[in-house]
Length: 304
Picture 1 (cartoon, one colour):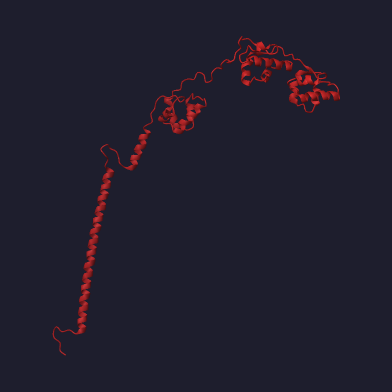
Picture 2 (picture 1 turned 45 degrees about the vertical axis):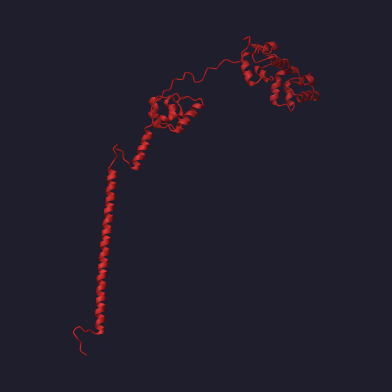
């Protein structure tokens, strides 16, 4: 079979068609990737330009300050505030014994140090020197160095006041002999009325006489405060007392003494009845229930 010039067999047509499609596919692929690469390049360039612009603006802000010369950086602002607070400390003459807490803190002391100083003063203590001031808890070495020139501590004439005379004084301003004074004489002392004066005399008579001024403090109704007030006006010229003879005294006579209980009076009489007369007063120590303190207390009032 003869073929014309443009005649192709079916197999050849398939080959031509495949080659054409392949060529077209390659062309389109190349064109697509070139287009994507160009777009990517343009986007990247745009981002780089934007980033460089932002960076330039940041650098300009770091270099710039406002018209007052202040830096707007957060850290510098914070530092400025702290510095401003520190600058609020003021210095002036002050007496650490009278200054208020606000004044002490205005001078630079911490709240803790100011409170400790006030507590120290409240105990009655007095700050008389820089050394005393430096010992307050919370007061730093810097505080001491900065405030020493401003300490204004007046000289304290007397930390402890001279003792005042007793509030209770004798009406007649004369002394009383406790072993010879009668109730009217005791009543001359302010604070000792007719009731107490009668009690003092009755107690003295029951004892047989005072052997010590301190025994007046044992009278019912006289407390320690009153006794200390009247003691300077009491005298004891005669210490002679009436003694109880233990070998002849009755139970009633012994029990009537303020220092001898009824039980002890009974034991003294019973022991004498069982063993005979006492040879010496110290034989009373043989009574087991008689303690040494009581024996010493009654001894001046006993005899054989």
